[in-house]
Length: 301
Image (cartoon, rainbow, N blue to C red; front, side, top):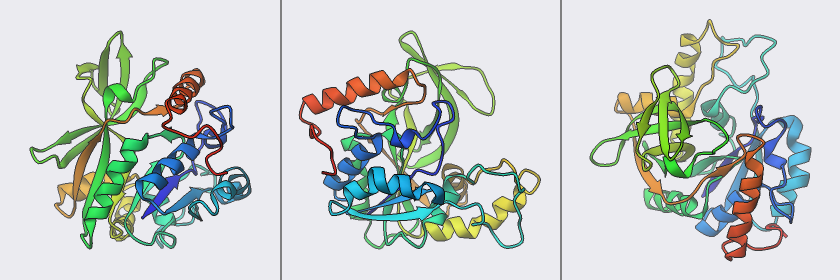
């Protein structure tokens, strides 16, 4: 099974490449924890989706450490991976979104795969849930999964965060993913859609997406088939629009072309959304190491 790590973006609020910010005394990165968890869950190959100009720093700081531990490959998110007949503004530098990112890795993806962000700590249970789903897929097509977190396990006390609030049917299948702003207010969690609306209190156990999906390989065809329609719909906003995998999956579900299970995990998310978050992340991961859930040395050595 392949794990595609989306690492082409920059952490604008934190500043710089969060993906290569040491997070413990052994100078592991958050991305190292993901690879460690993925390998012990049964993933045997990791694909780094990066900007081509960052290849050297990724290879030196992360990639080389895991060569011989897990199969490592690289793919590049490039702005010229667009449907024929369209031209992006010359001043656009921001990547075109997660669906386009996955498409950029098409030649490297060999079979069923999962995706994660490079700068989020997902936790061992999340990778076990994703691996179990992929192992049971067989030759199924058009059936995907979102590894969903309890809202209470994904927040920071240092400000609001963006999360995909999930709505499911009675079978646990995804009906809608609402991009939302979530924040703590005392001991309560409040949420509002990013498109507008009043902040409302939601249950702590509300399920949210952290952009961890598991896919059968046919999702690559779905991304490619729907790309021209996305570009046409956004032809007047090609400087800013983003082709996002959650949005596409939602549209495909609406057309009954695919289904997406929502699989909950007990894992706790950690990430450096704000600079002030780093100390808490460092302390939390150190506690997991102290409990023996992770090795006390460099993971790739």
